[in-house]
Image 1 (cartoon, rainbow, N blue to C red):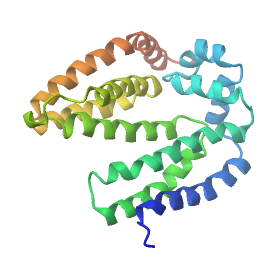
Image 2 (cartoon, rainbow, N blue to C red; image 1 turned 30 degrees about the vertical axis):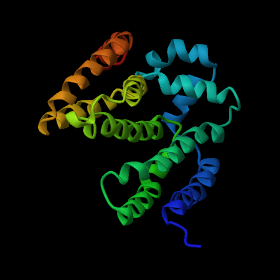
Image 3 (cartoon, rainbow, N blue to C red; image 1 turned 90 degrees about the vertical axis):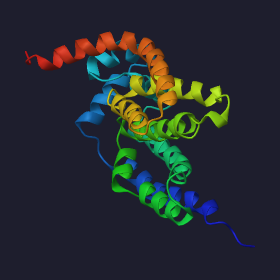
Image 4 (tube, rainbow, N blue to C red; image 1 turned 60 degrees about the vertical axis):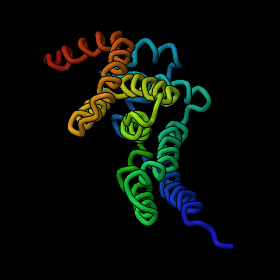
Length: 234
C-alpha cells in the first residue's frame, strides 16, 4: 500500500530532532541565562508569579509556566524537556503553515529544514523562552492567515469567530510571553495595509485594542523595566 510522504515526514523529523536534542539536554551543562531561569522558578509558582517580571526584566508567562512544570520534577533535564516539547509541537504544526505557501515537495523539504535546523535544536536545549516563542510565532501566523488573509472577501459571508477569538487569545498570550512578538503583530497589520485588505485591517485594529487592554497591567511593569535598564548599575 502506498503511503503518503506527508504521513511519515513529521514523525521522521521529530525522531531525528529528539535523537539529537534529548542526549544533549541530558549531558550539557547549563550557562548563566539558564541558571537565572532556574533561580527564578525554583521556589514555586507563587514566588515566580510575584517576582519573575521584576527579576528577569522580561515578560513573565514563560517563567510562570516553567515554575509549574518544575513542580513535577526539578532537574535540569526536566526543565529542558519543556523547550523540547515546544519544539516538537512546532514541528507538528509547521507543515500546515508551509502548505499555505509551497507545494507538496516544498512542504517536505521545508519541514525537514525547520525541524533539523541548528537554531531550533539549540532552542530545544535552552531553559529559556526561545522555543516557546517559535511555537507561538507559528500559531500566530497560521491563525492570521485563517482569520485575515483568506477570509476577507465579501463572498465569504460571516466570518468564523471561533478562530478570531483564538487569534485574540493567542496575541495576549504572546505579549505576556515575549515583548518582541509585538513586532510580529505590527508586521501583520502592515501586511494588511500593503495588500489593501481594509476590512480585515479594521477588524485587526479592533482585536489589537482588546489585546492592548489585556496587556496594560504588564505594560506598566514594562515601563519600569525599561527605566531600570536605562539606568546604571549600582
